[in-house]
Image (cartoon, rainbow, N blue to C red; front, top):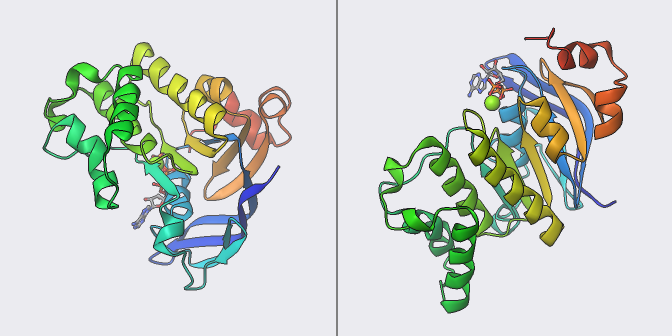
Length: 245
Ligand SMILES: Nc1ncnc2c1ncn2[C@@H]1O[C@H](COP(=O)(O)OP(=O)(O)OP(=O)(O)O)[C@@H](O)[C@H]1O
Ligand SMILES: [Mg+2]
């Protein structure tokens, strides 16, 4: 398998408080990686570093064979291969349709007939067609999360970073979002990292899983071995619900 990211000795500090300290980690093309860990473990921080929205305090992030860190960051063209759906998605105060096409327009892409059809199909699959002309900031929580994922997918990103995409959603919305994630990886062979608090979701979606605890990567593994025979005591504790922070 081809690594998309290789992380080495990655550190992130905020006001001298170290929140991330990962010796090494690899993420591969074609996989869904489930990132788990208690609140405050550093999951969202890691996503911001992987999206090159923030710089690491020290260490290297190798992305598609190029090394970044120490003041060196990817060019816009490279950065645009990566898209994050944030924990709390903010949609613009305009129609759902405008929200979905806005990032494409920003990039100077023309929404021609073919692209328009593609987006309409995507909205249909996500059960969003009826809300197309509705103000996006008035959508329900589940509709908002679906719209945020649709907006990310229209880019056809090579790397999709999802920060708790289904927290606080009901089973129907969770089902739609998980189905879209699975379809995307199957069709496009890209790379997806999904942060989730839900062990069942990680079991349903991920190929590999990792546990982050107090900024450190405790363990990563193939889904089966991670859940059935974790190597670390901390992982076992997390899986049994004993590790809360
Ligand atoms: N900009 C910042 N300035 C200072 N501290 C920060 C900043 N961003 C994050 N932190 C701290 O870094 C730690 C990790 O935060 P992060 O948001 O990455 O955790 P998380 O694993 O995503 O948690 P949750 O599951 O609650 O979303 C926390 O202690 C947080 O308070
Ligand atoms: Mg978070």
